[in-house]
Length: 249
Image (cartoon, rainbow, N blue to C red; front, side, top):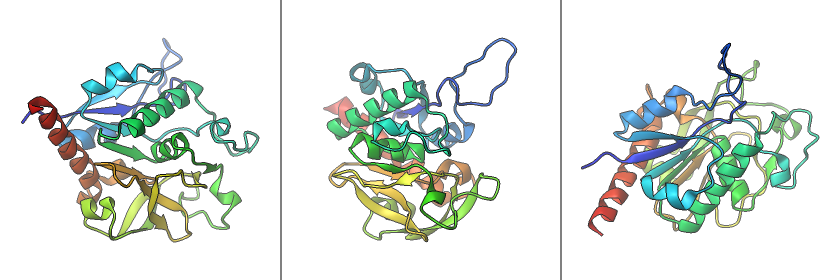
């Protein structure tokens, strides 16, 4: 069967850390996302922010990954734009990814995996809100290490969730690096995983054929942890099936 095409959103033009004497702005993506899709048997197609013609783009894709990155502008969810801990927003990326998420929610067919910022994009696109900075609402920040980088945290997963079915686990250790979190859950989305401090760690959409949104970063450990790679494997398999159904339908 033909390999499925998996669209992966990239960082905004000013988000990355690439240095060059020739250029100041870049669209970039951490390699582990691409590696995980290739291990799953998919063909990764990178989608840079700024796209809006989703009616033309989505028919080319069999599945989509909305990736991690900088903070969403709080103006998108009625939040506090003056919070001193906010990372610089990329408005081009906000508009592009929120438009993509809304289009995919309306369509309700394309397999979708949302990771970290991607989960937040999904929640905001569907009408939810965010906490701008977890340390503002929790005494201990278990979601990052002391340097504000990766931390391994424990996550509890609901046993009747798609995530539990895919990963084969209801308790897992995940690579985490987020300072924001879901506040009000959007209508139509279901909380299916949480951290020890009660922070929401995963969302799903009941009735959707395959939609998983996780607050952690499965791509970071997927190369060594089969349970994390399973998220990409299952996305690619569902995308492969969707591609086959379109071909014969």
